[in-house]
Image (cartoon, rainbow, N blue to C red; front, side, top):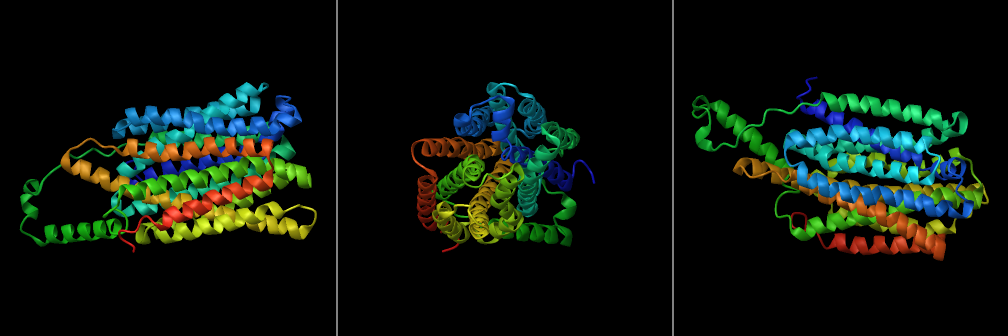
Length: 433
């Protein structure tokens, strides 16, 4: 496998996506315990500092997005920024597990936010610019699949290791994952960029033969297949709807992630491993990501995401009725979390894929006309949606848990999902109505 090949770029970006997801997910079930044992935060302040640490990830990401959008429009700078992201991962991992003061943990979470933004802006921007359009749907599916594996393995492995071997064991495992990721990033190389050309510049040997005719037919057929569902007649309101859907779904996810370990402790007094299993239930539907990415390239995001947001709303309405006092209610709670996780994955994967296909089409047009690539700025907008959700979700969760209760939070999140379903039902209609 050549370091210039599409396959190696998919491998490197996929490994980075897995490492980033694994690092973030492994911290979720153990963060309250780290705050209590390593930094001596009082029990009544655990929810506050947990929410602050989650919101810090999003707030830092917003700032990094602006910097990346202004500096990474060329493929070379995308690659260099992508490589630098591994340094933030190393610093974040060390800070989280060696901190003796809550401020250090907040800084470490800020570094995690910077690393995630680099992945979404520079990493996905580099992937989109590098791979052929006919395989972009597959590439995005593989990246989301890698994120799914990280989301699934992170909570349970992090919780079990922490409970049985301490936080140094978790730190060593994460550092090994970051080392492998960093090595793959360093091996990345860019294909030589070809200047834009016109029909008059085609090799004369191809102008009067079957080779040129067959090649152009194959290329145009592939282009039509990939563009027919997503890149024709897209309206600005469609992209805005996708942006809002990512914010809402991400906010619901981060709100649940920042409150579930504490809610479980209050109701069921579960172990850290049990909390990791609860987070696993929320994350496990992410295995559907590659399939959903392919569906989106063929049929668009409208119908599947409208249905997904309705299912998510129903699960959120039912969640507060869990009390954890018997096996049946615990099983129902886990099933509802899996259902909610499915709705979240449908919204985030489908609309991220739709956005990526639009960006790829725009970059092809820019390359043909010789205009400046704007992929980094486009992905910065998508990453901004993710970071806004990481900022708003924990902030909303902390406010509701302090001033109201878990039931009201779930009902409010369900209301946001219902409003999102209405917006999605009225957009992305051009090609699919």
